Length: 181
Length: 170
Image 1 (cartoon, each protein chain N blue to C red):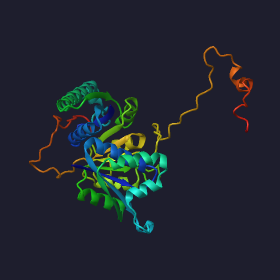
Image 2 (tube, rainbow over the protein chains, first blue to last red):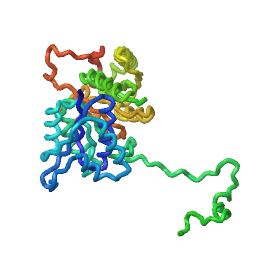
Image 3 (cartoon, each protein chain N blue to C red):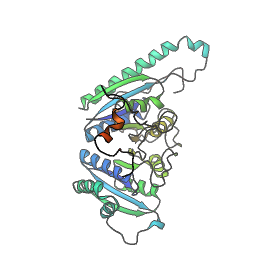
């Protein structure tokens, strides 16, 4: 039975990390180990089950699907205090993980850095493939600047007369879109 | 079918990259596209004498790349994984990401280090560049360090050998 270690820190990339881990687990018939490493100063007063915590923190719409899916795969969750890189590598060795799933950046998302410190450390020390989920959504162009998508320029549709679009909403009795209600 | 792009450089890391790509394809029901980017040699010791042979050298490299690619892809197809292979000439750092966009790849499977494996660095320069520029999921396969491979271990090389480039530092 294969094992997938998914390291999460409840940053925006966590939902995607979970989704990928679940998809992979389903396809590879693996079980998932959810690992959250906390540093001592962010210690929770009450230890709660990790699944419940994940469900509470995420907005209902998105999480609803994930928690449903989470019930269909086997696995367990862990919350450990310590240095994230060390703990992730230790746990990976302990459960002989076949994959480690990680976001490329976590909370302190310095996107100028190539990958966050945790991802860098884990990649360096891992003996199994590390699946990096990109934290930023936009691609970068060759110079390393974000690709900017320009808004579509207003173009006339086929057979349309030039003045049509401007006055259309007034003609139809609606208020134009750009006025305040 | 999900697309898994596996850029290869026929270094020590390649056998494992191919293996992991095959496992991933089976797991997520995807098909693999093997990509080899043949690099124009950047450093040539004796410029004038080698220039005459540059075209020949390039053709040789490309032919060798094609041969190895076809061996690997036929090996994969025998195992039941849908595979395609591509060989382009250019700069790996930008071309891999461009092709990932063009082919709408969901995953990019790469080794952490390639030929010039400085294991003190977290990742090789090509892998770093790809991670920086792409917004796909990148699967980083750890490259074998010297001494890690024990004698007698069975490794499925998929038929690829180390690329012997005569003129250049790859």
